[in-house]
Image 1 (tube, rainbow, N blue to C red):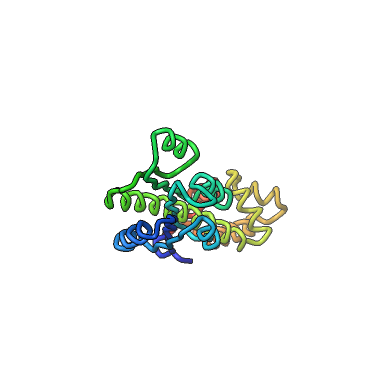
Image 2 (cartoon, rainbow, N blue to C red):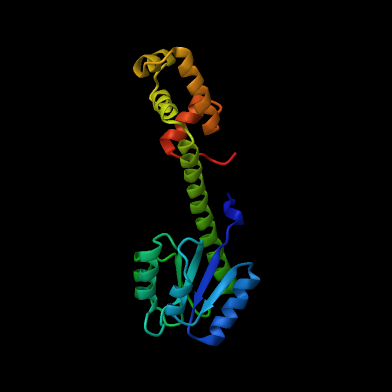
Length: 209
């Protein structure tokens, strides 16, 4: 399983002005980001993969689909995908509406290079955090699925605070058999202590070692 820092992060740049698009794309690449320039919202949507972490920089005034309409399409596909509006004809009301509708940021042209790159770095950090959460949850579910039905019963009983003799009575097992199942649960789940096992079961996540 790749770590979040190894996974791709794509900046989708959507601006119908070719000269602006080229200049911004050069800046973003120089900042160390993988950028996909698009001249239209339709081109962006054709290229957009909700499963790949990234963010979108949207010009507010685009042909056919404007910035707000395009952001709505993105949110329908991936609600957590950061959208940054970048416009040369923005006003306070437009900025307020953008932020209320969930925009990650609202910037105006000409944008300061440092401001844009700082915004992209913040969006990437947010995406990495979300990826880490996803990996931790997937790690827990993968290990949980490795348990046998009986081991799962023992896990549930241990997490609920039952003692070995109580588990043996409830499941109709010998106490030494419960101990064997319990040891296997700890090993398969990758836990050293009962406290770790309980914490993982409550949060349904296992952090990377």
